[in-house]
Amino acid sequence: MSSIDEIRDARIKKLKLLREQGMDPYPAESRREISLKEAIDNFDNLEKGGKAGWIAGRIMSIRGQGAIVFITLNDGTGTFQGLLKKDILGDEKFNFWDEVVDIGDFVEAQGKFFTTNRGEKTIEIKDWQMLSKSLRPLPEKWHGLQDVEERFRKRYLDIIFNPEAKEIVEKKALFWNSVRKFHLQHGFLEVETPVLEITTGGADAAPFKTHHNALDLDVYLRISAGELWQKKLMVAGIPKTFEIGRIFRNEGMSPEHLQDYTQCEAYWAYANYKDMYKFLQECYRYVAQKTFGTLKFKINGFDIDLEKEWPIIDYTQEIEKQIKINIEKADQKEIESKLKELGVKYEAGNKARLIDSLWKYCRKNIGGPAILINEPKITSPLSKSSPDNPNITERFHFLIAGSEVGQGYSELNDPLDQLNRFEEQEKLRKAGDTEAQMMDHDFVEALEYGMPPTTGHGFSERLFSFLMDKPIRETQIFPLMRPEGKSEKLQSKKTMVAVAVLNKEAKMEPWQELNTVAHLNAAFGARVGRGDLFTRDTVVSKDNQHIKLNIKNAIMIKIAPSGKVLRELLGKAKDLELEVDEFTREMIETTNDKKVVEMTASKNFAEIEYLGVLIYGPKDVVEVLTSNLKLY
Image (cartoon, rainbow, N blue to C red; front, side, top):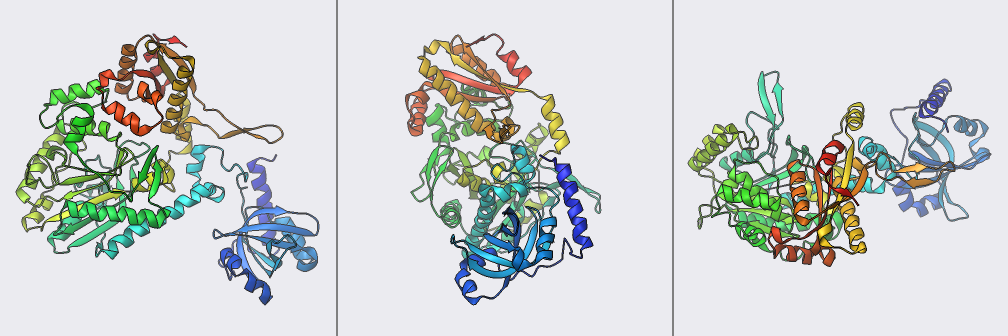
């Protein structure tokens, strides 16, 4: 088999031959008269009319030899068969085709439409023209790109052969078009607000920083879709606004988080958070139906029905129900103690962040869809306090499959209260909290002119990725990638390993041990993802048979002498921010996730019996952590 360089050199020779014979290999226009979809839809009329027409597309296959050749064209709207016959095309044009055309080239073809004896809709080609000569071969048709990271890096090739990748592009466009249409139908005005800001606001997130040369000014890339700017429009008397745009947060990556992504935010004067969550519920239903044609989804193992009534969940009550702590009454030390008991990684010194860590631990158990309300004031600096309880806010979160997929609140419009909250946030920033919000005197000044009662909402493309049941990175058309050389260098330096550890004290039957290891490995693969586990998808035998390749990382099985040792190991792994997967007695007793959630919620963490855990991370770290455990 020829190398890529050899194939490219051969095609460059064909490129030169095209030019020598007077055919422009990259013309500026095409004579295409109809798309391939239109040719299929109107085929009966085209065939009966007998008139020659021009079609165009990429050559996906070439079949036959001698005086008859069949080709398959694809123009993005559909595929269509073409027939070249030497006696119809003529010796010169037919032979020239044979000399210069390859799979992957874009061509236009003119001819009459007919049906073959096998019932294939076909165009009998009488003339042709090169539209774009390809110099590199397409990936092998049935297997496409072998390397998972390469799929992201060269998404344009992935889309050619992977229907799911193309579906993401099409459905994502439909998703955002539906979001826009719903807001416009309800009287919202679409606006554009600055992406570069002197101070960031509207979210708790670390920003990207850059420099504006013309103004000689350091600026930030926005972390929200114009929250404070849109509120200034409320001050200006524009009652309903929304924006769909890119935002940037200089934070970690996960299956739910990226650093730059699309978000929708909307603001509505003379309404409150209850009005907004009712509006947003209908928006989600409308968008889901328009994009996917259904309101029922399977997401992260949860069965989600957007059509049913969404239950209302109280923030403080839900935490107390799940993990037996009242965050309104508990002091900071008690919250830290509970986080340690739960094995949750946290940063000390900030009660708001500690409460947020508790909530995120509880949130993962809620399938939803559900509406969370009554968030504490301490964790929500821009929302209005409840008139019934000044310590909680009129804020809501939409919960689906254990995560947040949208939120909103009654906006704070008291300028003095807002100034006080900004000052509290400023203290947190000075204490080292990079996600605390910056002081914005200009916004406070705008509020001093008066802003009517206002509510707002925000949701991002995370909702789309959830409805697709895919990691958010998979649903971005062109996710940010490290340069190839740097990526390979980093990978070569870091050897990763996974260790599954079974609890000897649990006295499991052999089948239970196998079941535990199987579930841990399945969860590990799902959470870490293909991109981190495979160097390529398949290996190929001498006779061209593709065999699925196993993961590149070693997986060992070890034994912990007791549940206590296993818990300590788990806590250390989380402190080191290693990837961990957990399997408890409840998970082996039932396959019903709802029952697992209920059974777990009825116990304190200390009462949960661990059957096993899996720890994944750098080989040197994981080996030291598990060095005192025996191999299975």
